[in-house]
Amino acid sequence: MKSLNFAVLLHSTVLPQGRVLGFDMEFLRELGFLWINVIIMIILLAYILYKPVKNFMQKRAERIKSQLDSAETARSEALAKKEQYELQLRAIEAERDSTLDAARKKAVQRGEEIIADARSEAALVRERAQGDVSLEIERARDEMKTQLVELSVLLAGRLVKSSLTGNEQERLVNEALADLGAVKWAE
Image (cartoon, rainbow, N blue to C red; front, side, top):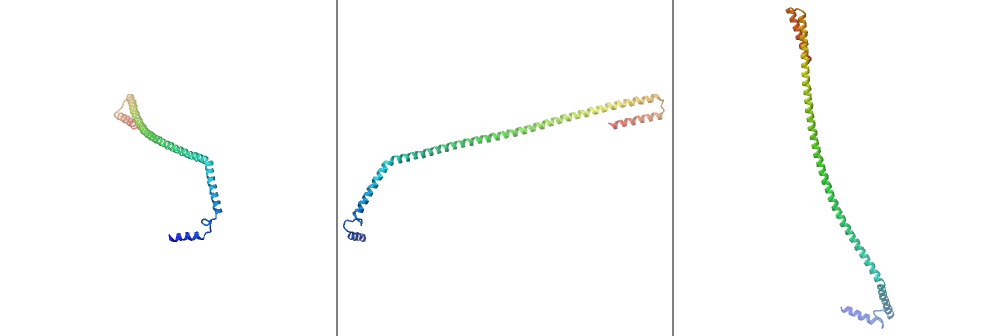
């Protein structure tokens, strides 16, 4: 601290009379006028530009605030729409699942109906076939009876035509039986 005081005393003794810190009076006067002009210019510019700059800044702040508000509003609307779309999507998926389940059940039911119809139709075909077989059997029996009657009539006619001897009678019976055997095998 002593060295600093000594340096200031030494410096003040070296400086000529009328100078402050080594500046002459004219420089200090110009410096004072310069500062006064700067202060007056700042006051004038502040007076002239304060309101327009303040209005500009205020409008800009309001515009930014309104943009932020509109962005927040748009964001909240977008979130609401997103939630609404997600709900609709879930509802559509649930409806799709229920429709698919109903279609599966209907297909299974229709398949069972088709199988039941096929079984009943097969049973009807089987019954018709059995009826047709029975009718054919009856027809064959009737035809066989008719042939037996015709054969009997033919045999009786031959017997009547001729007086038969024992050997001839036996031969005619054997022929009739052979013809009757041939008729059975023809069925």
